Length: 301
Length: 257
Image (cartoon, rainbow over all chains, first blue to last red; front, side):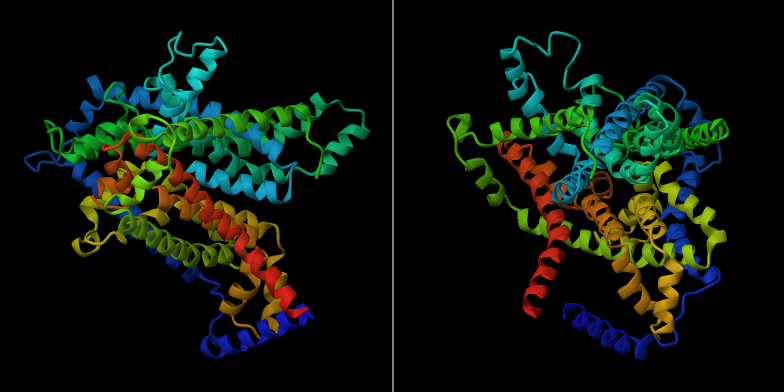
């Protein structure tokens, strides 16, 4: 009954539509690419080329590469190193934790699964002041979790941990990095066939052998590309870094942000543009390394 | 559904602790009374009394809707095209969709500031276009994986032999067939536009996240309450997107029977 009514609905709807768009067919040529290419051209390539052009012009409108030399000195160099270290560690840690969560998640189903995957969507996009306040409320000096752990005789502030320093920020980044990993890695996990595990069992393979010879080799490319996304996401994280630090941790996005806001007047007006290009350059290098690694892992397997 | 191993259960419990603990900590503070004494909902009430709550929330919700619409209109037909006739362009588009990952949002913001025309820079809807760019890598992956799991060409042939036009096929056959992938893509773009801060603040627009940052400087407990509410509110919005169609189709069945 239901299906019949729905089919009728679909047919009448399609008839109505057909009068309007009867001439429309799926494009088979380059035309089908036109929308996305023009969109990316206007809102991605054009802004980028504008930064590049701006970074080459100094205060007197002469063309020079001089500003790029500054990126390798003093605070800017340090900012790049700290940003890279933070992004790399965060991608690695969140990569493994997120993969473990998606391994568990693919074995569940139904409402629980929907709840977790939509929660991951939200958590992956938290950041900035809300995230900072939540972690300060929980793990700050006066935080409720800190107090609870102290009650269990574990003083998390006994060591070098502080919610506002490098390690604290790494910890906070996990809150959006791990869900991001879950979102992008779960589809790859779902593609693992149940038959493979069964074949391994019937051939007498152990669980370790299944991991070593089946699961890990098939998942490595997806894992690498997912951690690459994680790297990019924490490398360019701005809102959270800005809310968590009090100027004590030099990170490139923050340095650019202060330059753009006009709070600091740089020696050269195009320094912000050069820093922005520098971030793009670092990401390009990381992507190149990723592609090389991917080729290597494919040849091995 | 396979059974969960001990390691899986350990992971889920650990993850639950990691993600719920900050929320609980924040709740603990948010539920405190005036000047931090006793317990009350005064901090949650404070949120609604702040100027700009409804206007900025409205702006962000509208931006999210426009972004989601743009993403659907731009990405779904393109990826479908790649799967049907444009296989040889696949590499190119994959590359184009990878580029936004390489470009830090801060860089994109600076570029937008110096390259976009004035009339566009005067409206917050400018942000939508960049939200589409930022969500492109994730949306592409989601839709691509969705299309790989169905036999697309068969569906399209069947639909067209019944006389459906390309657009009808897209709307009534392909999109329903990859519903979960499309919902995933919508999640990403909506959650992104609701929570995005860097672009909005660097381009000097007022959205909900920038408003949160501004008012949070006045009242610590109130802004902790606000933080918790934002997170849970965004989750509720996404859950509505997941469960509303299910509830609606349930009702349809009961009416028809």
